[in-house]
Image (cartoon, rainbow, N blue to C red):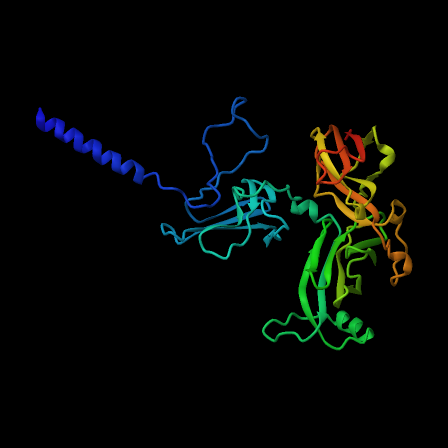
Length: 400
């Protein structure tokens, strides 16, 4: 009996050692998706779209329709074990979004952009789980739907010598337009990239200031407009809504201590003529219900003055028929400025303001039928204890 007790004690000690060893902390990476082989029933169904599971323990390539997901485990079993995910649509890698944890809804569920980390371990690029230290981002537009939108490419050039080891080619029309401006030496500050409806920062330094650009919502089938904003003034750059249309614009950033010229090459990659125009909603819709028929996008535009520190923000959306497509953005000018002029060289009227008066706007995309109430407030973000200067509320009634 004594020998039996000793054996049982030894087994218990060994189990006590082995269990903690088997519970090592996982690396700080997105966790593997939780999947189940249990068939969906009314009690277990969580989504009307079936999700194809991904085995995150091994490298593999997954294909479904026009999507492809290439998942790779590098240095498996080591302390530097890393996870890489490449997402393709129609055999082309999708472009990285601006924000961490923005995601696509795919046949494998949500795939999040977690960035390109400089270390080998952890998650990289597109992962099945969001980066835990950041909030969940926005859902990105399906590439098939994005392909129906206008697309403008931009290349940013500044004066100076181009390094030989990094010498992107300049298109012939860019070189010709630069010579017309008598510019002798330029280098590519940022090579061709796609402009979207959300502002992209082109330059931001204490020495010369900040410059951003974005594609404005089209208002007709003849013109596309790029909005430039340097914090003091806004400029509308118009291009003919024809594929292959080009334009080179010089914009100068200046401060009391320095100034710098930027040469912005713009090319219409996709005109998307015939795509439905977004329905605009202004301050006159406050407190009303707006019926939407045959509309895929809605733009709410409200006047404001950013020099006062006041800004419009969305405080709530009650309903599921529309969802925000990006953040509230500022555009210098007035509501009257959204009637584009014929394409041509920059004119004094293209400079929308020299002060803070402008428009705060946010886009919503239609995702289903029904009513959604959007409430917004005009206030200073740091004055949380004070009532808003203004409020705005509109109910969007999507009927088909």
